[in-house]
Image (cartoon, rainbow, N blue to C red):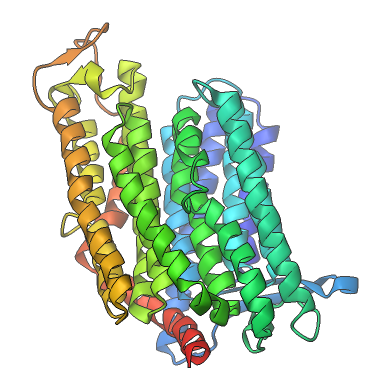
Length: 497
C-alpha cells in the first residue's frame, strides 16, 4: 500500500479542478477525486486488517521513508497503525459528503473545491506522518484553507470569525512547535522520528516543562477549554462543507496530536498533568452542554455541542487507561461523522428556509421528511442513543474512565455522565421545535419547499452508514484500535511505575 497516493490524489485532483473551466466539470472532477480517495482508504483498511491477521506485529505498517532536510535530520516518513487508519477512513467519508453537499456552490466554484481538496490532503498527511516536523507541516497546511473558506464563502461576521480562527490556531501551532523543538533537542540525538523517539526516554524535567506546550497547543485545535472560543464563531460563519470539515476533520487533528505526540512521547508529563487534563475536560463537557442550552441558532447549537463532545475525547486521553484511550479515538471517529451529518442537515434546512433560528421554524418534518429524518438521526447520535456510534464511543470512555481508581477522577466521570441529560434536553427541544408542531416559518412560505436532492441524500446516507456500523458493531472499530491503544497504554504504564 503506497501511502503517498492518499496525499498526492487530493492534491492532483485540486490541480485538475483549477484547470477545468466549466462548473459542472469542476464538481464532477471533485466528486470523482473524493470517491477515489474513499476507495483507496477502503483498500488501506483491508490491507491493514490482512497484515494484522497474518501476524504482522510491527507498530506502524506500510512505512515509507526518504530524507527530506538532511542538515536537520528531517524525513518524509509515513506509516499507519489502527488509530491512523480509523482517522483516515473517517476523513474520506466526510470528504465525499462535503463535496456532495457543496454541489450548488456558484461563487468561485473552482477555488472552493480546490481548497476543500487541499484541506483533505493536509489531514491525510497529518494522520500518516511519523516524522514530527512533517506532521507539523501538514498541521499548518490545513489552517490557510480554513481561513479562506470562511472569509470568502462564509456568512455573518465571516471576516471576524476567519481571523479569530486563524490567529488562535496559529497560536496553538506556535505552542506545538516549541514542544517539538524540546523533543528534538533533548532526546540525545536530534531527530523528529516518532518511532525512534518512542523508544527513548526524555528527561523528567523536560517532560514536565514542555508537555503543557504540546498538549495545550494541540488542545487548541481540539477545542480544549478555555481555548475553544474559535469553535462557535468559526462554525457559525463557515459554509456547510467547511463546517463539516472543521468539526468532522480539523478538530480531530488536535485530539490525535494530544494522544500520538504529547501523551505518547511524554508519558511522565501526562501523568504529572493528568489532573489538569481531566479538570479542563470535565469543565469543557459541562460548560459546552449548558452553553448549548442557551443557543437559539442551529449552528451555534452544534458548535457548542462539539465543544462538549470533544471534551469526552480529551477526558479519555487524560484518564490514561487503555479502554479510555480506545474510547477517546472511537469518540473522535463518531463525532467526526455525527457532527458532519448534523451540519449537513442544518445546511440543507438553511438553503430552503434562509434561517437557522430555532424560534423561526416549526413542523418542517411534514414538508422535508428526508431532511427531518437525517436531523433526527444526527440528534439521537449526539445524545447517545444505543445502536448509534455516539453511545458506543461515550460508554467506552466512561468505562475506561471508571477504571481509574482515584476518587476525584471518578467524580469527573460522574459529572461527564450527567452531561448526557443536558444533551438530551437541548437536542430534543431543538428537534421538537424545528421538526414537529404547527407548520410555520417566520417571514417565509413553506409551500414551495423541496426535500433533499440526490446529492444531499447520498451525502447523508454515507455518513449515516458509518454511524450505524459503529453503533451496531463497535467491536470492529475496537479491534482495529486495540493494538495501538495497547502500545500507548504500555508506554504510560512504564512511566507511572
